[in-house]
Length: 434
Image (cartoon, rainbow, N blue to C red):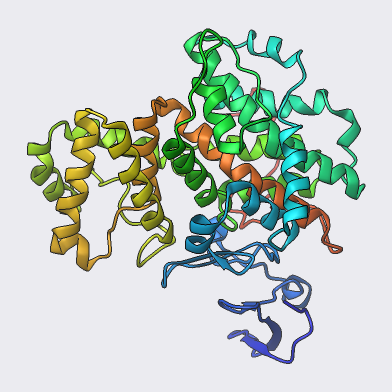
């Protein structure tokens, strides 16, 4: 996108008749944007856009979403093709560097990530300060932010080499910290990472391995985990990514910025959707109750909502869902899980996809529906679901942070407001107040 343009948008003041020409900027694809950066200086007015749902906050070359058509692309590659043909680490390289790696580039990147998966031994003691029943996301906020106290040699954000080292450390170490968080919550010993395993295999090993016996890698589960990580790697300027960028605009160190993103992701309106799917299934309770709850979901006056169906961004279908449905079917078949809740989920999917109400409104199962089922089948408690989301999204956060820092026009984020409080008023002494 270039700031140089001949296209303009004319804004007219109805009271004064004055007209203002605002530049229109075009991206590679998707809607054009009206450049309002000089609007206040020329008109003495700010724009008003609560939640910034109609405002482009930055230029980015990473991810493109077309919600109407159900398109998600990273650096020009569709998510379906990446999930089918790439590994998570290859997608991570793509997001960080702009292009898919050659074999030599990938081997070097894979080596760098693998040999950064260990964390400082003193971090083990950090966990002891948390209660055993602490929420895993609370622990993650603390330990990820605490990384800046251990790795002083990569905190200079203006040094390209230190930025790269920090990026590699975050991508490599957050899975280790996430696995340690899970182990701590269940009272099991931490498992050190293994350099002979790939990214997803190593993560499952650190979560479910035990020092008392060998851990056997299940390729079906490792493949499903890799798919989950790819599909959640980045999703444009969502709440947590915007939080990372806002924190980074103040020139905060990258560990603090990613910790801020984790805190934002913790919100149930953002990262807790797949957990909400499992909670909804508990509420439905039994397959025989599905028709009743589907009718409730159609009733606007009923507070019940069908979680995991439809998407705020994707108005047609979630392009990630089809990929994960296949992985979900493979996991359930491989594990042969005898879990009434998972059987309930599959029956809910079948009935909802045949119901004209949901079909006509394009309320299809989304990525959260299938990821929740897969993670449950793997044995993860629902409290860990958002942590696993953070493991995947770290790649996107780091890539977005890196892109922002390298932008020559970087300035600290400073949204404006429409003030609706009292106008100036005189101070009254406390003994005279009524």
